[in-house]
Image (cartoon, rainbow, N blue to C red; front, side, top):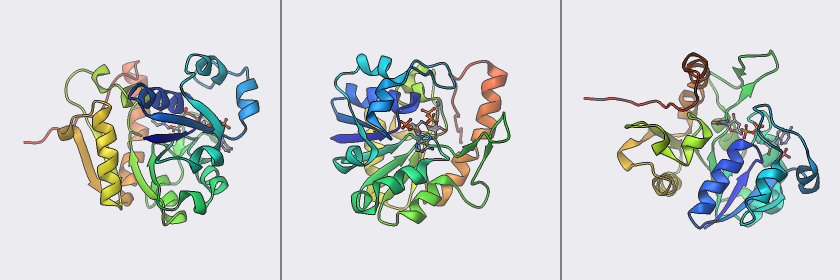
Length: 228
Ligand SMILES: NC(=O)c1ccc[n+]([C@@H]2O[C@H](COP(=O)([O-])OP(=O)(O)OC[C@H]3O[C@@H](n4cnc5c(N)ncnc54)[C@H](OP(=O)(O)O)[C@@H]3O)[C@@H](O)[C@H]2O)c1
């Protein structure tokens, strides 16, 4: 499958590498290929510049967002949540219409410092905003409730733990569930919450996720929903 990952950060890189290892033809999208390859900057978490990672992943292509998205069978939104709608606007409806987008982003707002708040929140969500703006894009919110390394390697955390999906298009959700299974997520651990309004719930797990990260001193944990 031709998969395009929108985003050059640690999430984009990790999802790209994970899907590349499964044999998919993977392209990463960025604003400006030249400046992304020239950048010497680490990200906010101390990850090395993109070019350092890219040198070890020659099977993955890097293109501008629009060009990268044009050829995709499946898209992943791994951009900064505050910029996601603008990134998709720059790609445009003509290219996005009919495609499936896995929305991994969280609308974290760092404008008031740490810890970040969420914007939008409560009665709206980033997943819904993307779906509302791009009516013919099939948005499936998933994977946003865990650390990125776990997304493509669920066995990193021992025992049973869950990944959530939600979205309006059943076929799109089913195709994303197949991708999740190929990454190692067992079917019984994939919880389908329903339509895209459920993005509110998964995005609003971020405030507790961030505090658990601080309290536990590690990002290697996940939510496990236990039922009788
Ligand atoms: N870190 C985790 O473990 C984790 C887990 C779950 C969900 N998430 C979510 O995953 C997403 C990606 O996180 P990340 O840490 O990998 O990367 P990030 O730093 O949040 O975002 C990097 C990407 O966003 C683009 N971007 C940033 N500002 C932009 C702007 N003003 N206009 C257009 N594009 C812009 C960058 O474009 P360029 O390539 O052009 O620089 C880059 O591709 C976020 O929404 C985050 O909340 C993260």
